[in-house]
Image (cartoon, rainbow, N blue to C red):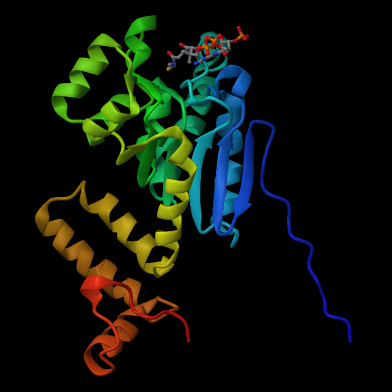
Length: 284
Ligand code: COA
């Protein structure tokens, strides 16, 4: 009897976004290198479909957002996102903004799998929002960052100022927002904007290492923990206490791996591991 084989479905890439799968990692590549990966309305709309597809695709266990060529992203497309929508009707203009915000922070922040921004090069203005919305950001030392809005006469909207306020320390945030001066990966790390900065030659390897570490954990718990973190940041302590107990109960009840029971049994009864030093044995 012949075994039924299913051809792998194609990667959900589009005109402006390339997706590559590698051992559980989905490399989501902003792919307009000739425009320094500036984010156009078309790219923004495409990204919504890409994220929808990856959410359900088992080849994606960790999503890495990065850019083709020498750039992460030069921010919003000044021609297509700004100039060409100046005369749009209010409804058209609202749609363009909504598509952009829908993925650049909302969908990314609450994406049910871990997300890593791999900042490989130029990173300006609007690019700060998806970078900050990823769970972890790792930059190349050689990357160039800039809150360049002041340099061309706008304020950092597109939730850029909010994103900066989330991660960057206040002194640096105001300095770079007001001066538009550029800075490198090491400085981005010192301000809190990215978690680490490594030489460009090591960037992909370091990101792969972090992705592999995340993949060793119970994915159901990883998703619940990141979403809980994002939610409680906006709550007071009474609300978060209540929310977290409810979220915890729901998470354990719906955990296909029954991690909590395994963790307790292996520590308290089998004495096969120490939770302080590593994860319980998964599987079975
Ligand atoms: N929007 C639209 N087009 C952009 C763009 C953006 N944000 N960033 C770069 N491009 C386009 C350029 O217009 C140019 O197009 P062309 O080949 O049709 O003339 C092409 O990409 C290459 O840009 P160029 O400036 O020649 O590349 P560079 O390597 O010398 O410089 C940057 C790279 C990123 C420093 C420079 O392109 C830049 O300052 N971009 C704007 C960054 C910015 O302020 N972004 C904030 C937007 S909110």
